[in-house]
Image 1 (spheres, one colour):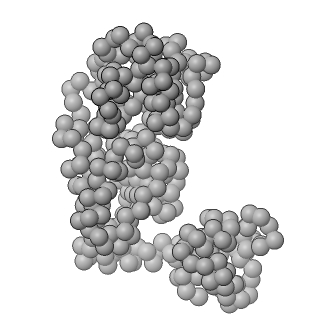
Image 2 (image 1 turned 90 degrees about the vertical axis):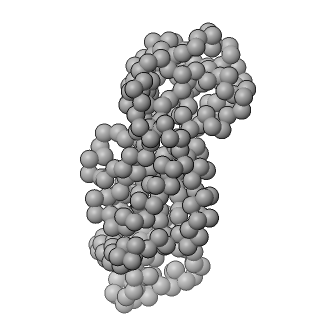
Image 3 (image 1 turned 120 degrees about the vertical axis):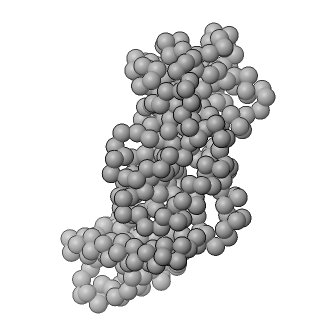
Length: 308
């Protein structure tokens, strides 16, 4: 029995498919299948029912998977403890990040970090808050970059920056003539909102009291800020964008941006890790790189802002 075999077993369990599991482990399907089969022969049990699609564990296989996961977590922590004692800035580091943060933050620090630390294997996955926190609990990722919301008490949270929201207003809307946006100005408008499960949506709905609008036929629920921006640019409705998105706008696009009236709704973006996280040197490096990459005024909550 080897750790490699246990890793393959966990991969099959997560992917529910041998070919997909092999791809995730960067090995051939025959290699992975053979290693799992050898473990089954050693234990004299069937871990997976291969006749079912998607592949499912047998009852005894489920017990083996639970123990395999615990063994892999302990082995990983042992390795991480050694790396931290060396203050190593190498190895693999998995980060989960919200889709409403990733396209505006990642380009600001990721290329520079990779150039400065070529031996660091930084892997980033876009995830909704609920999935990200679940992945942290199961040690599927090392850290998460999320908006500070209720339910993070069990994690260690390090503040990265504060980011205010802006309205993005079509020229066909009366609100386009306003210099600022007030929450009550938004009722009854064509509001392009993200789908359920995005804290970006939930924070704005709470601040702007958009409960009625979210239930109306004029509130459309899709999944991309960039998609909504194209709707607005082509002449219909209002959406919302985060502060870092402003850096990527053309002059023509900036004409559609309207700030909120005081107090300005603002989210606190944090890096989350479990309380037992070990590789603090690497975490501090990434936190420092991110803080250096954002405008200095975003590192503190400003007097005109209200955290949501």
